[in-house]
Structures are given as structure tokens and as C-alpha cells.
Image (cartoon, rainbow, N blue to C red):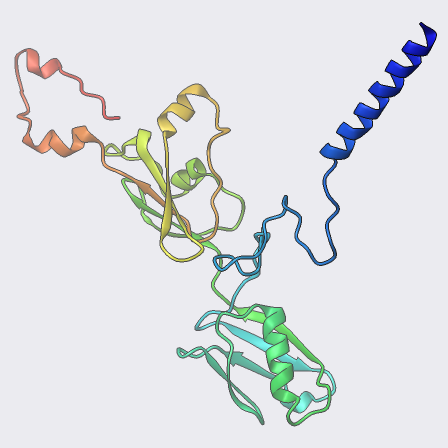
Length: 242
């Protein structure tokens, strides 16, 4: 009986080891791509990539910056990005800089001056540039373009733009956000509900270039066509815009 138990135990151990060998993943050969990691393809030649959370400012037409050269002060200058995206450098000529970040601009100017100077040391300081802003349009007290000097929510942006007026539709405020490839993404917010619930956790924060649009409510659209009674029961009607 004891021998039979030992034989059964040995058989079970053999089966268990065989199962483990079948479930273990095969080793990845050198240079191969594991199945769990998306490989590069024709649609995505570089494979997966991380999105930059805090993008650097890119130069635009009309921006200006100071160019300082520690060991060649005769080339120090203040430059303005021209309407065609170029700047004109002392001793070098025109160089295209529009759309570049400060680190990219520094490398571009180093390469340009390397033609006449040995290993130039360059420092760039933005002087005048487009400041972050948001735009408020529609049924607000003061539509317009406002500087985005601090972190603001949609509700705060509406308040800065003069608040809602009697024609505002509080329940369908639209936040338009510039997309990475052009155009805008839209998000509808029910500000009336957020304020009534005293819960602003879903009150979105603005990003530079956002557009806050407050549409017109239905009542104000049809109001011009509604006769205004001066006597009788109609005088006691009270229509509340939403």
C-alpha cells in the first residue's frame, strides 16, 4: 500500500511539472518584440509614444527675443519673428525659426553661427510673446479675449467675462479646446446643475486657447414673437429662462 501511495505521488508531481512547462511563456529572443508591447507598424512606425503633458512654448510671428553671445558680444541683438517666420541674424542672414521652442531655437542659432564662429555659446530670452488667453463668446456680460494668468475653471471664466445675462442658457455651456492636429474638441457643461448641486468637481479647467461659448436660451429666442399682455391673467405669467 505504501509503495502505491509513493507511486501515485510521483505521478502527480510529474504531471504538475509538465503543466508548468506548458504554461510558462517562451523566452523572447534578442531583438524580438514581446507580444504585450505594441510593435511598430506602417500606421505607427515609431510604436507607442508618450504624450507631452507640459508642451514648451513655440515661437510665433511677431514674437521677439534677446540673443546673447557671451564670448562674441558684437553679435548680441534683439530679434523679431517676421511675418514669413524668419529672423535676420547679424553676420549670418535669414533663418527660419517659427514654431520652434527655446531649446530648438538655441540649437538652430548655434548651427547658423557655427559657420563663422567656433563653438558659439548662445543664450536666448523671450522678450515679447503671445501670452496665454481664453475667449468668452455668446450670452455673457462682456464677450472677448482674456489673459489666462492663473488656473481657471469654466465657471470662473464666465464670471470674468461679465457673468451670464438674461439670455444665457446655463445648462449647455460649451467648452471648445484646440485639437493637436487643428480644429476644436467640444465639451458641454451644465453649469446650472453644477451650481445647484454645490458640487464643482466637474467644472473643467481651462487651457490656453480655449473658447467658452454660452448659447442663447429658448425663451429669449421666441420672446420677440410673444405678445406682452398689460392686463388680465396674462400679466401674471412668469417665464423663467434656463
